[in-house]
Length: 141
Length: 141
DNA sequence: TTTTTTAATGAGACATTGTATCATTTCGTT
DNA sequence: AACGAAATGATACAATGTCTCATTAAAAAA
Image (cartoon, protein in one colour):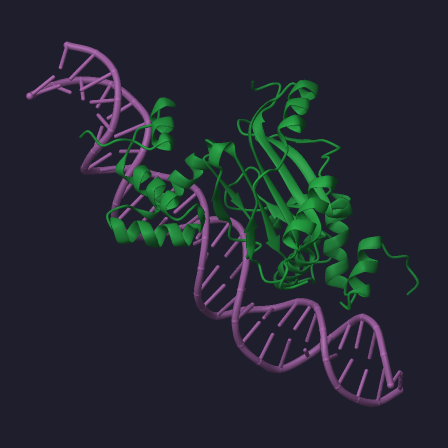
């Protein structure tokens, strides 16, 4: 088949993982929802598209994508069920209203400098980050 | 009883919540472990101290503390079971090694400026934040 | 101090979410 | 086309979190 692959799918293959139907479907679902989904939502959407895909494979894909820093689990409106956010370009930032749980995205995080500083000081190699601010949104404050 | 209260316990009472045995025990456990614990660990430790305290109350306390930004659930070594980190002074930052899951703490995050900028631009009131970097630690890179 | 009010509790059945196992299938390569 | 390793799907299971409701205990009022 000669479909074109999304950059993330490319990355999957380049890292040595097989491009299976299950993985591509999960990735597709995440991408088409902007990557703010719980596992249950992903399971539902995947099921709509291809009900042959098993529950376990969905969880396995979510785990794999997490390890590859394609997505990141975080806790938004439940302190127990994670929401998977995409890490476009390896990073993500938002504000969570602690009253109504609304999520507000914003652009610049100015963390490039801190990142290189930490890499030098601690001898680590950083590939991404997640920055969450908590507080009250304009409606709730 | 005239025990002195921790600042966080004070905060609980000041916000109008009762200082119950269950809540104080959970808080105590979190504080004495530096606040990097899963719910199961908290349940175990609480049970050691006072086995009368019910499972539900522990979860209720964790939820409450999360709402008050005393702790924050985050992903560390499982993409599903959250680890609760304390937000001392309303914030927390660390590096998670995506290979061995080691957590490296660091100090300055230099986010004060960004915080005030966002408050002004978006008309929000921010009370805390969580900053996570992902990458390979010195041993794994 | 005693009483009152009401939030919070604990027990435990239940629901939800995630994982392990393993025979079978599929991908990518030869 | 055939091969081998990786991944899958089915399903039983395990772990984690939630609900209900009668009872208790914390804080306020008397």
